[in-house]
Image (cartoon, rainbow, N blue to C red; front, side, top):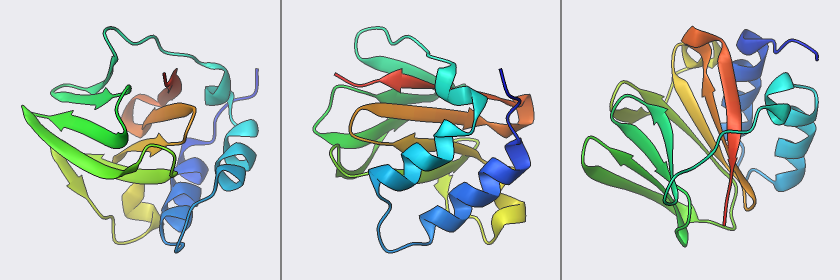
Amino acid sequence: MPKTDMDGLMKQLFQLSRQAQVTATDLSALFATQALDRNQFYKKAGVGVVDKDVFVLLDQSTNRLRISDQDWTGKPSADPEIVFIKGTKVLDPADGAQAKRFNAVVFSQERVWVIIPRDRCGGFYSRG
């Protein structure tokens, strides 16, 4: 299994997040070259763990996170979206170098990827 270049992945995610619209094709091309596309996580009752006090709600009509008992709601679940999280806050990194110090949640219509650079790990949850 190929190793994941975590720094490179986070820089690419940052660059994609700056585009007007992220497409499923963009995400497929990015994750096809990464080992985390083969690392499936398993949800329980439609919820997946991102980090301490951060959860992804997978069976919703919108991209949604639960962070310390508060919900963050993004685009409709059919629309790809990249979200960066630092601790219990959804933040916008200033550049690709800063992005590698954040966790990332990448929503697509069929999967939600979770990337934790500090632990050098990541994987995906299936939606639906």
